[in-house]
Length: 141
Image (cartoon, rainbow, N blue to C red):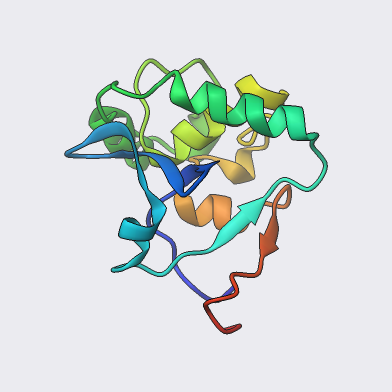
């Protein structure tokens, strides 16, 4: 891809993005407003059913209103990836919100392999389970 990604979220359909931000917590917002000042890439799990996609969105929505996991984001940078065993998360930052929604929605554990820990937006952008989806308003890079 050649780009560095710093944020991740779950596209909920109808122009809605569910994401976690430091100052807003986990929220639903319009992707079009978000996209005005940022470069976007859309990645999709190709091997799941439409129902599983809906289940992922529902799982992400269950976290709306929770606070941002700042401590979890900080400690993930301080603890070596080999020591970060997969465990239930009580607080989430953007990419762990995506991971929790995916595991709850379709059972795929995105950080099962140590190479995907810690799970950051850049890690998700290179994750082998996702396909990139062309965005028609942006030319290929």
